[in-house]
Length: 273
Image (cartoon, rainbow, N blue to C red; front, top):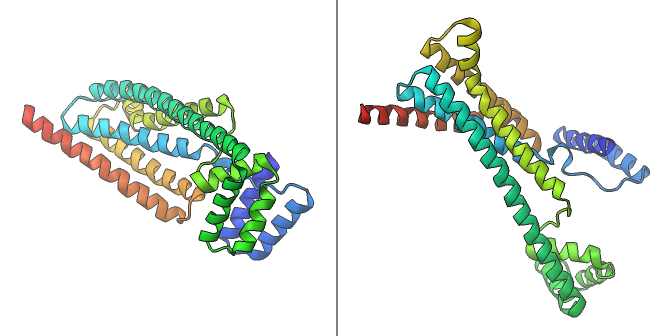
């Protein structure tokens, strides 16, 4: 698996560098080794849960900090509100990710059973549907018929193709551990990244003896903005944007969310006091 991930990383690097010769060498070596399946997930297998959880965590945490500071609360209150909300939200996000992934997988597998039943009971109709799909996408009638009839000889493979082409669904592994891992990744990323804006509120007063409200808040601001940019830059590895464009986009959107939270906190403070 590690060797396959390395090949995938090298293939991506060749693409990003627009180096067709490097790409040819990588694919030729893969074919020679008999490992034809390219692992397109690679290190990004859980990137969706990690990025989503991390961004949600740090933005939620800083929104609490900004709203509390905008509302004039003391740093002790900011700390209590921040950590209690982050822990509760992280648990909620982790459980939600697990349940939603499980529900989605169960739905896909139920649709797979339906497709298997239809293929057993009306194979000609399923073959015709697939031929029509490929013809609509520009393949000639004769070629589409030949391709589909060839695939239909291998029923398990053909069912997975039908799932993707007819329903737009990828058949998941029937592994309960995978959904648990996704939920755990969501929980940990939310909790860990969510704790970052609050670190200054822990370290400065207890270790450095600094409890100036302004210092603590601007430390949280600097930490949040830095992490947002880094997360955006890392996210670019799994997308098409450059690292600096992706980092700037994440920074701008996250900063806007934080600004709204701060202004709302100040507005509510002005209304109730």
